Length: 140
Image (cartoon, rainbow, N blue to C red; front, side, top):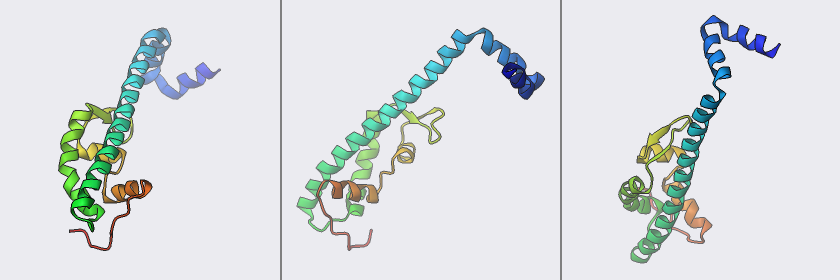
C-alpha cells in the first residue's frame, strides 16, 4: 500500500528512478554514505577553524591590549581579519554550504556564514574569557 502511494505520488516520470533505487540499494547506500562523510568532514573543519580562531583571537587580543590598553573589539577585528583570512585557507579545504547540502571552498565569506566572525563575536569571546574591552570608542 505504501509502495503504491509512493508510485502514485512520483508519477510516471520518477517511477523508474524509484525502481532503480529499490533494485540497487547497495549503490544508493554507498552514495548516501559518501555524501554523509563529506558533510561530517566539513563540519569537523568548521569546528577546527572556530577553535583555531578562538586561540588566535585570545593570543592576539592580549598582545593588542598590552600595546594599546583602550583598543576596541572593532580594532582587534581590523588587525586580525587579514591574518585570519589567510590562515583559514591553510586550516581547511572546504566547509558545508550555508544550507549544509554540498561543500564549498574555504573563504572568509563562506566561513562567516557558518560562524559569525565579527567584532561582536570577538567581544563575546573575550568576555567569556574574562578579558574586558573599552567599547566606548566608535568603530573606525
